[in-house]
Length: 111
Image (tube, rainbow, N blue to C red):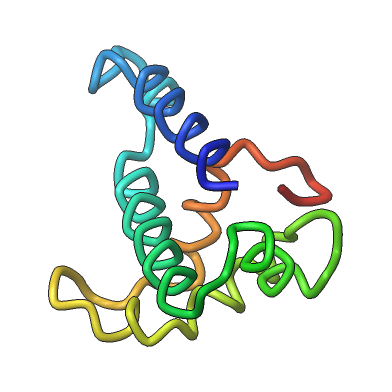
């Protein structure tokens, strides 16, 4: 799971070059990419601490479904104490988490 997500994150970063596009509609929302980076690290630490594989973490996040919906992603991540108590930033809003989810290239059905 994390290998695929890291690859998608790397592609997102590469696609975001140059940092500021000439047209505003071509600009990448870098705050969403940064938030996804934070969320991914929090999830990795949480899985390690719980002794979970990435597949087990995904199953927990998606409630056993094949795809992780945006709603489940937001619900699961917004309640993580590590995101709520981060010293680096304010807790993310549901809107910010939805934007971070969108950076993964999810379909309407989920990721």
